[in-house]
Image (tube, rainbow, N blue to C red; front, side, top):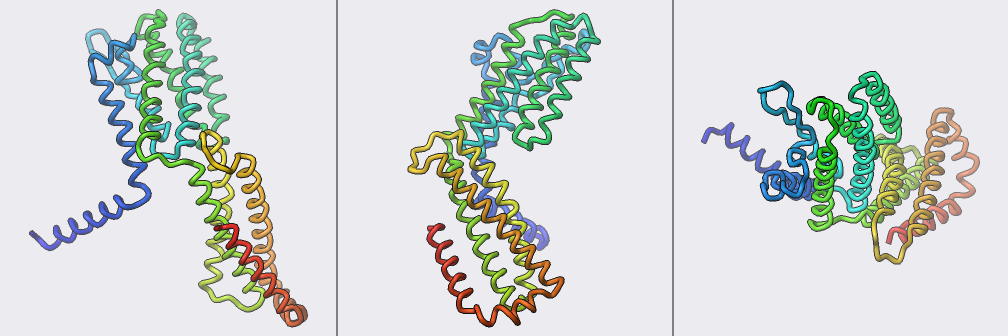
Length: 335
């Protein structure tokens, strides 16, 4: 075997091994499994008989483009399986599935309206334009509502395509078939998420709370040390990273708290307890960030040197006692 090929194979094997034991392995496996199950369902002939429009199972849009030119299949029903995020936490998967199905329901209503307006293309344009505008309003809400908006638009456009393919006639069986195919995709995602190595959002929230407190504790220590003495370059760089991590923690905690609300958990902690704890941690993070920015401002205007010369010398013992008390408090909370 050539040496270069051996080196490449060794690197590839190392990368595969590293991925298999990483935190991304299980979500990737669950996602691939849910997509595979749905595609298998699409090719089971007997299963197609329970759907009034079997062509909607393997694809969300099936259009007879030109006479004698066959069928053009635009895969789309599998999109809802992807958008439901089967590899995420239980709460996140259920939340995304619920929002995605709500988008499908709204899109199905537009499907019906657009199909009935097949003889008035201008009216169809007005309706679809309004749908696009309302879906665009979901973009500032974050990634959570992207699937809701896109699936609603997809189902709306399907109403136009199918109606024209059928010569302007509305077929209720086709609409019902599309809705069932999307429901099958959602069911596959939720089933895999619940049955294959499930991860609860509550567990992730607890881990995020501990990580967030660890970030806060370390940043507090560095700020305290920075007022007492000059920090080396490595610790100043660490403070910048901690500041960014704490800002990310603020959003992560809110997202996980929202996902936890969609789970049924048997915990001694209620949602009110988690909400209160997250709110207190966010307030603490806000105060820490303010202290960090005050420290940076003090470094620029050299007021920290004045603090060390006229204040720190007489209160060093008291500040050290406060620092140790805060450190123990953080440790007890994290346990």
